[in-house]
Amino acid sequence: MFLITIFLRDKKVSEDFLTASFQFVDKMPPQKEFIKPGEFIMITNRSEPILAKPFSVLNATPSGFEMLIKIIGRFTGYLSEAVPGERFFYRGPYGTAFEKKLNMSRRIITIGGGCGAAPILFFNDRYPQNIEKTFIGFKSEAVKSLLTIDEAVYESQSGKTVIDELNEYFKTRRQTDSPVVLACGGIGMCRALHEHSKKKNYQLFVSLDERMGCGIGMCKGCPIKTKSGIKMVCKDGPVFDSNEIIWEW
Amino acid sequence: MIKLNEDILSVHCCGIELKNPIVIASGPAGNGEELSRIIDLSEIGMFTSKTVTLEQTEGNPPPRIVDVYGGIINSIGLQNPGFKAFVKETIPFLEQLKVPVIVSLASNYLEEMEIMVKAMNRRKIEMMEFNFSCPNVDKGKEPIGTNPNKIFETVRALRKLTKKPLLIKFAPSENILELVNASVTAGADGVVLSNCPKGMRIDIHTMKPILKREFGGLAGPAIKPISLNQVFQVRKAFKDILIIGTGGVINHEDALEYIMAGANLVGIGFGVMLDPFIPLQVIQEIRQFLISKELNYSSVFCKAQTSCKA
Image (tube, rainbow over all chains, first blue to last red; front, side, top):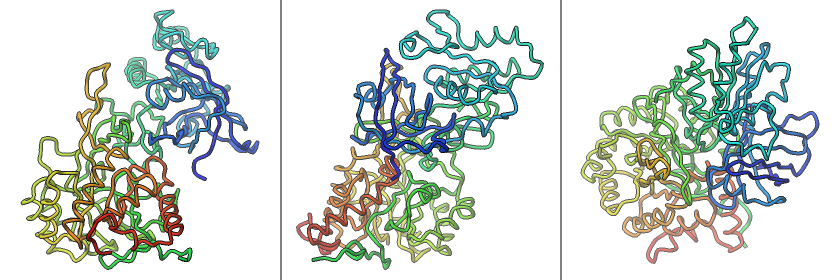
């Protein structure tokens, strides 16, 4: 069957964030990788005609997966009120894994903003040998009661953004090679990082979040303008070299 | 007792024998490349291409989709690579599909439509749909689809260029009978009812429209009662034309309502985005419904009309 049944195992809510863990009906075979960092799945509850929503995962095991979600719309609102045991469905994974777009022989600085922290932490966990440094930024401290993130920067507490932290890091960085940065977060953060990358001369890959329709490239609902034409965030991304993107559209 | 076979769903229209009355509507399923990797398209009655324009169309900037109760508002803007690339790259794919194909064409200029219609004569496609009603292009310009005289002139000129069945796609309209009459009098074989009516949403935090073009096309179950009534009214007035009823079909009940209202065929668009398996599920569920009632397609077609022949 195309839609795969999952059950909500547990969830925690703090202001506008929630963590939710889901379990598969049947365990994945140990050798089968359910999802790679950078890929996403489309989740629905099928109880009303809302399009399935794209989510990346925070971590995955053969028995299930965990997500960090910002409560912003009807479906995420529904998820925040769902009770353990409730049935959901997913299809996927879709999109391109980070490892397919990045040069994995290099070490990478990773940056996550808000719920964009999820795929970054997942990537860090899967490829620790590739991580040069990580910055995870949140506007408020709400997420503290849900997750312990060692690399987290809380803007409300420190007044600093991930870009401020990155600037400080660059002052002390000893490596002589040009840095490579992988970032996932809102469009504002990605755009600001793109400007920053031009000034500081580093290669930036951004994993974008866009309202999606089908999730597989057919409906043309999640466009991004690039130097090689209009691409779909779901099928051609979600990760892009920021230099390829035409940011003003 | 009716036997469990394909025949109870088969439909004959415009000289073409279809397995069943379910059509993939133009738009959400693209040109079938992705969908064909998920479902067996040969199980579907007919497939409609994404609307193509003569020149490449970039489409609208994001966001292109916002949720509403009972569906979405979309503002795709007919993104397509243009007719030349479509003929070179997409038509060969559509021709090898084991399903009859409708190619959807759009332009506000007759000369552009003429070029595309003529080129389609040489290709293995079964029908052409003229999308004169996309809400998401040519801001400030009246689409052909709202002006009966313009429709008549355009369709009459295009009719002379092809023997293939021609369908005109309209958005819901108060003067739908006038628009359909203009199309049919000019030689169209049928109509597709309905394209997305315009809708919008406003972000109460920014106090601005969510879509960059302010409005988009409302799609999904929210428009089904409106589109169903358009089908019903058009069938009442035009007994013999081909009608594809589309708008908000996500299950067999929706599809059967359209058929009973007088739609020969039923298009699924939004439903494919909701779950790409919906078209196959709808076919299966219609079959089960008909078998359980000992009916077939002909015995439910148009049955909500008081005077309608099957």
